Every structure is written in structure tokens, then in C-alpha cells.
Figure 1 (tube, one colour):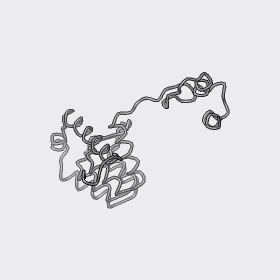
Figure 2 (cartoon, helix red, strand yellow):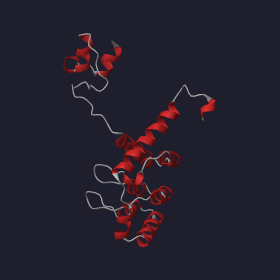
Figure 3 (tube, helix red, strand yellow):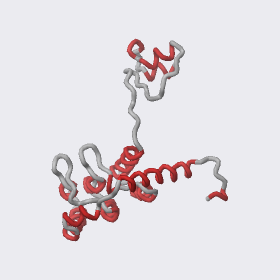
Figure 4 (tube, helix red, strand yellow):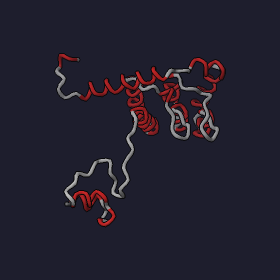
Length: 180
């Protein structure tokens, strides 16, 4: 009963999970105390959240690991249109900016508010980040970059499937040492 009190924050009459348990019903993990259900997230949304979280915390080894297992960072964006390159520029990390540029992130891309990675680099105050992005902008004109960055939906789906399979293989507790 302790978890119910904590989870419902002492507001039992409005807590749907609490009422489910009193009635002997199974309360799904996606049911919130207010009765709303959490929406399922796609693997792309989960991958994007992990990547943006690692960038925000400047966890370079984690970012490299996420990209290494097949997450297509150049195709991800937040609901505001923020790309991983913009996120890296906003935290002022030259190494992350360079990593995102090598990954193929579009330096010309704009958010829903019209800001670019260069704008975020300027706001962060990191001149090295600005210089890296300016160099990429000069090296790849907008028209050329957009043409080379077209990725088919099938390629994205295959990348997602590959990511999930690799993660499941890593998490498999029954894998013997000879399976590696």
C-alpha cells in the first residue's frame, strides 16, 4: 500500500491507479494517476531523446556510442526543429559539433523559429564552434548539401531495426561468451 500512497501523492480519490488496485484490476504501467495513458514512443523518438540528452550533458563517449550503433543523428530533430548539430553548438562543445558535422548534419537547417547551428554557436560564445560551422557552410553550399542528404524511408527503417537488434543483442543475458 506504501507505493500507492507515494505514487498518488496522497490524492486517492482522483488517482486512477489507486482505484484500479482497490478493484483488483491490473493497472497498466502506462496509466498515469490522472487517468491519462502514456503514448508509445517510436524507436526513433527514443533514440533522439537519448542522443539529445547525451549532447546536452556533453557526454561525448555516450554520443559516440549512440551514433556507432546506427542512430542516424543527421536525420533527427526535436519538435521545434532542433538538430543534434544545433544542440551541440548550443552547449559550446567543439568535439560534439565536429562529430555531428562528420555524421552529416545539415549546417543550413533551420528550427521552426528560423535559427541555424551557427546562431546557436554564436549564442554559446564558443568561437571554435562558430569556426567549425562556418567552415562547413563554406565547404558545402546549401543546394549541394540538400541533394546529398536525401535518405529514403526504407534506409531509415533499416537503421532503426538494426539499432534495436544490436541493443537486444547487447542486453541478452543468455548470450554465451562464444557468441560474441
